[in-house]
Amino acid sequence: MNKMKLIAAVAAIIAIAAGAYFTTAKNEPAQAPAAPAPVAAKAPAEAAAQLADNRVYVMYVDTCPMCAKAMEYINGKYADNAAVVKVDLNTADGKTLLKACREKFGFKDVVIPLVCAKGEYTMGWSDAMSAKLDGFIEAAAK
Image (tube, rainbow, N blue to C red; front, side, top):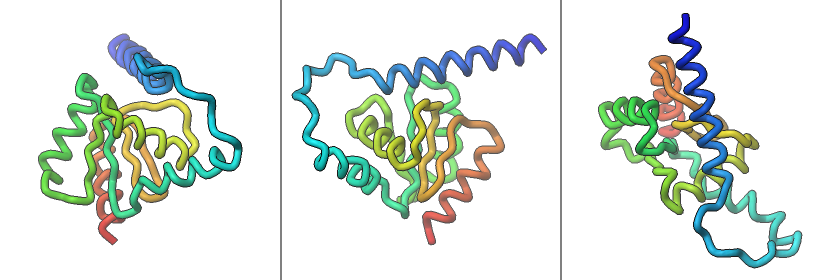
């Protein structure tokens, strides 16, 4: 029982740290003030448009143990599947796609791995998640 509490506590800490990491700009130069409201109103739609409906985006970080398990499953079963897009969240493109996914689905906190596909998303990984991922990939192929 104590082992489960420890695992839950570690998972909560990772989720909090990931949320703080991906919402805080690090070592980036100061930006000019935001554009006027009409431009800003278009930004979420443009960002969400970056997420193609015929793709399944698997967002991960190399140092995440749950991400490693998810990537092992994905690389074993879907290594050559063009519908599966692996997104490293430590890259500029990864952060852009994460922002697009957040805007499309409206969530604030992030638990990785994060899988975004069509009108659905899921966070975290377990053996049961593999079936959900399979369903996402099958739906993307349609």
